Image (cartoon, rainbow, N blue to C red; front, side, top):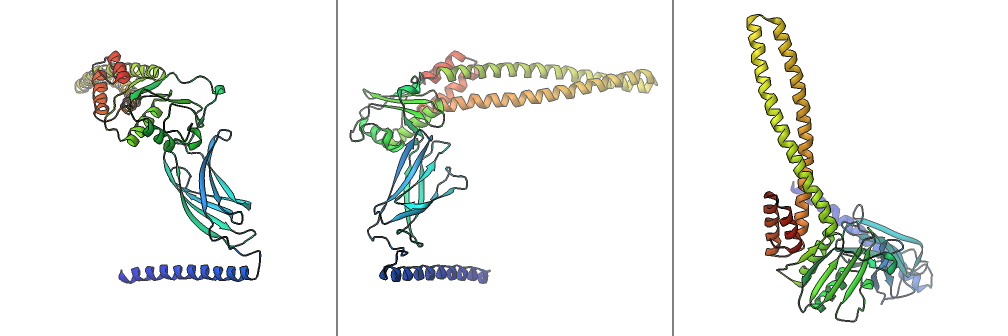
Length: 381
């Protein structure tokens, strides 16, 4: 075992030695080419730096990662970007036939996640065949897929969640600068933020953020997005306790239909349980009757009884399949109920989050729909 480990280490060291020797040979050749005035030298100015920026493109419904060099003599030939939850396979390679001072990579994350992009930029001189590798990092904001909204984007959302942040206007502005792409936040030099009017490039839904008198109002028709925003903002502001009031009429209407479906499925389940119990009792009676007929030698009655028993058994199998389907549908509906409770809880922070979960489950258990809606909206019973 020790010999195998030593062989593996020796192999790794040998490979590293070969790579370093090749790198040294390339550098030596570049130095000679530069000294002779050859245009193929891969040398770039010693003070060359690379910068990154995130650009929002409503037309292409994505954001672009742009990597640029500080010198016109240094050309970006290729980019290798590593990022979880962004690319299939966790990496992406971009290159241009004609290398320029800047190279862009298209990013279109399917979820709102903050990601650190690890970038390897291949940079070389004009017409060079050898390149320098710049290892850099860039931060993709969590809500980068939101662009500035215009009047043509339709009315603002009617649903909202509202909560107090007190005298934390500058901290809210700092959060917005980090959570969204810089170009969508108005007045970047101002320490305060009064409003944001955005649109999702994934769904086309509107999003508004208003800050007035220490009260934040997040306007969106997506309750899950509102919860993500509340949690991210409170984490940034280091808020441990937060109460809020919410109004999501569209989602609550759909939720009411889910609750009605749960009641209907429960009623059907109880009815099928009673029917199957009655059928089971009849099966027992038929088995006893068939056995009695056999012992008495009444073959005709026995065959008739077993025929009835077979038909009833087939009915029971059919009812069991219906009950299984009903059970699966009920589980799916209950998952939707639990998901709605979790979404409502994420509109709060701290003890208020735990209280709303307990209160919602108690209201569902007592079948108090009005109380349930009031709890989700106000956070109080």
